[in-house]
Image 1 (cartoon, rainbow, N blue to C red):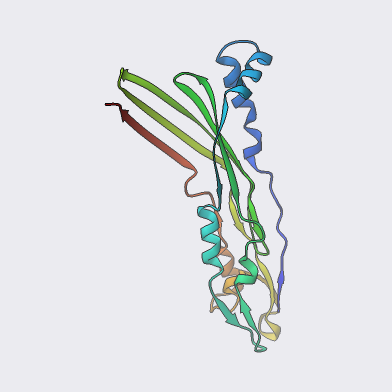
Image 2 (tube, rainbow, N blue to C red):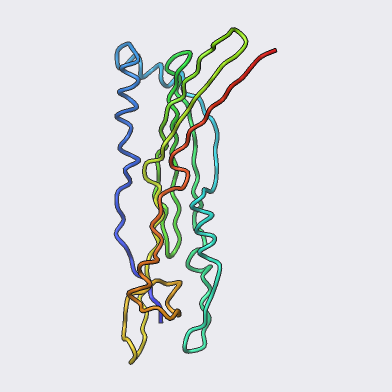
Length: 203
């Protein structure tokens, strides 16, 4: 019989990066209250997205099943079915004509046997106009937090092995229960670092 095992939830580092953002706004010039007001006035909504690369990974984990010794069937989808899909909103705070701060927040995602932590995306966008009819822009962002962690199960192997902690997906494999724990997913967002370059010419 497989039972759930509750893991410890760590604090996401993503929520502790607002201080550098505020500092950047103050250093851009002016007093803190004035710059804070300007930051709100110069903040623009860029987009909203539901789902992520890690959400896709969770969907793949949910493909499969196996049969228990008592004849019952275990469908992975019940463990990795999304109770809430990760959602992210992105914004830009303009500091000057040629510079801005990119930032966004994600809600995270969870199911019975996994959790994607909330995340914070932060970065910079710079733009210059080498000629009156052209512009070059470069931007880069990074994601803090947002890690995917898979939870384990507790399985009863009877007289053969007793009750042991095991990777839920590999409980019926030929691996020793302790060996299966090495394959629990612990993954950072694959797209956590992003760099973009844009050239635009007007005719």
